Image (cartoon, rainbow, N blue to C red; front, side):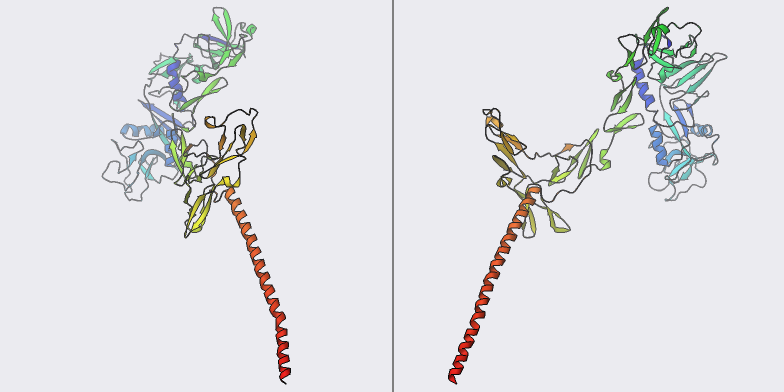
Length: 562
């Protein structure tokens, strides 16, 4: 799409405007208010959103402000302006944090959300409840003549009032007879009767439709920098090769020469048609036109089409602490760095430990967190958010269930041994099981395999002949290559939490050893029982055969006597 544009001679203020851009982005997070009012260096906004006191407080903070404080009769009078046509109750920034109400005090022991009790004004009703169980938050409403009414903090009011403070505000435009001005603030409300305008507010002077933006106590005429509200242009904003922002219009329309921002029907032949510009056609010199591109794009080599370029290469983008620049097609976004979250206009550290990502202990750090383990454990090398039993010595006391002393656990590479009423974990000599092809060195809880010169360690235990048999590997040219099975890791920075599980009581190697020993014991026991029963069977058979012989001899002796 091509368009017709005319550049202005506006001074380049892109550097200072970067701060204003962050200022505006921070206030574009949420739904706008239903109304508002500005005076001096403050703006007050009305939100008709049913909320608890805490939710209302957070909503104001997300918009760069806080719940309204009514410290003076002037602030009280502003309530009549804000809630003139509303009868519901709205939260203000007054609450009782702890203790009982203090009747002699002007604020009765209550405190503003700004954490102070300074006030030249109070408006408690005669029915004030001074009991220690009285509601601790305050609303106002037109029906109660804006008396400070105590309400339970968890109860939902019809809405809430926010207060926003600022500096470098602009006064109202100086208007000529027959002129008028309409103002719009970055907070999402506007009108003609605003007495003070915060930075980023815009004004439209009628009937010329000239647009302005408030910046550093002065009104800058559109077009201004394209990053903010399309430079004030009715259609779109672009920068010419001299980096000057200009407005342009769609085909068939041209720029209004009086205000340089609005578009009007083309009354003459369009000189840009023959150029076939992909985005913008502008008057380079008197009667001479050329193509350029929207903000966020650059002109391609053909002088007609436009390609995206990385806005984030400009280090001035997203200048706030803990912000990062995210390039998009035709523009960019200011987002919080990993480990931070938006809070109003700022990016604040996220307390990942609040989500309990670690199995044992969690230490929050700037932009991240670390997991740590209780004594007798270490961070698992495979899952840095989990902990595993660790000894690091020939033997250690076993980790036993306090409710069941027979339920005990040992680190991997250790086997349990009972000694009286105690259970100990003894380091297993894995080298005795010939796990390695060649060399083996036992370590606490593990082992290391090594290979002879001319061999290379593969898969942690196999030794494969090297292509170069004269190659010397391993430490200090010994020709031995080793690969430790486990490397201790005392503390690890965790990128992302995962599920946790209880550590295994016995390792795989220990379990194999226990099964083999048990099987051998059963075989020996069966063999012993078999031989014992066999011997007893033979002895019993011999006695049974001899008894009749004795009886026969006895009969013979009796017969002979007879």
